Image (cartoon, rainbow over all chains, first blue to last red; front, side, top):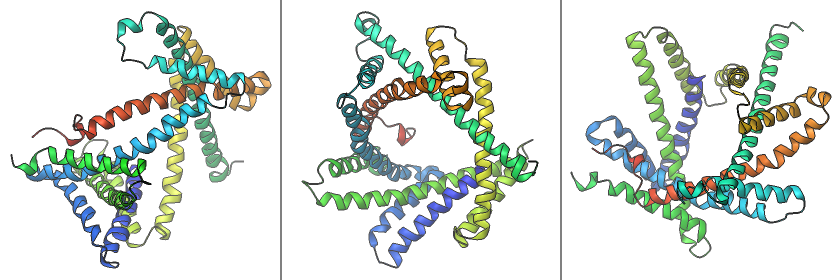
Length: 168
Length: 213
C-alpha cells in the first residue's frame, strides 16, 4: 500500500515534469520552464551538506506561494463567508441558536486577554458553554466516523465472503 | 558565510512570492499585468512540487534499502516487497503510461482493495478505543458520549426502530451544534493561519528553512 501510494504520486509528478515542463521547453520552446526545472533540481542539493543551503530557495518559493494563496482565498472562504453565513439570513430559531453557538465557541479561543481575566467575568461562562458545544461536535464527528468505517468494513466483508469466497 | 548562503535570500523569495499571490487575489482588476506573472509562478510551483515528490521517493528508497542491507528482523522482507512493488509501478507507469493494463491491474486489484481494507479495519480500532475511552466521567464527557451515540443511532437502521426520535435529534445535532463548532474552528483557524502567514512572510518564522548552519 505504501509502495503503491508513493509510486502513483511519483508517476503523476514525473509525468508533470516530462509533459508540462520539459515538453513545453523542447516542443513549444517556452524557455520560462527552465526556471522551475533548475529550482526543482536545486531541491536535491539537500543530500549534499556543502551545497544544502541551495535547497532553501525552491522551498522558499513554494512556501511563499502557499501562504499567498491561503491568505487570499483562505480568508475569503473560511473567514468572511463563514461569518456572513452566520449573521445573515437568520430565519428560524435553529439559525439564531447556531449564531449564538458560534460566538460561544469562539470565546473559548480568545487567548489574548490573559489567564486571570479569562477565569473571571462573563468570558468564563461563555467559554464553558463553548466547550460543551465543542464536546457535542466531537461526539457527532466520532459517531459519523465510526458509522462510515463500519459501512466500509461491512462492504469489505461482503466482498470477501460473497464475491470472493462465494459463500452466499 | 557568503552572501548567497544568507537566510535573507530565501526569506526575500518567500516575501515576493507571497505578496505576488496576494496582489493577484486582491488587486487583479486594478493591476491586470500581475495575473499573468502569478499564473506562471503557480505553474512553476506545480513542477517544483513534482521534484519534491522525487525527494520523497529517494528518502523512502534509502530507508528501505537500509533495512535490506542490515537485514532488520521482521522488516527487511517487507522492505524488499515495498521496493519491488513501488519500482514496478513506477516503471510501468512511466514507460507504459498510466493506461497500461499492468498499471491498471495493480491499481484496481491491489491498491484500491488494500486502501478500502485499511480504512475498514479502522472501524474495529475505533470501536475498541471508544469502549476504553468513552466514559461519562464528567458532564463534558457525557455530552460527547451522548452526542456520539445519538449520531450513530441516527445512521444505523436499528436506531429508528429503537426510538423514532433518534433521526430527529441526530439531525439537529449535525445541523446546529456541529455546524456551529466547525464554523468557529474555521474562523479561529484562519486567524491563526493569517498571523502565522504574516510572520512567515516577514521572516519572523523561519522553521521551514531548517536549522542554522
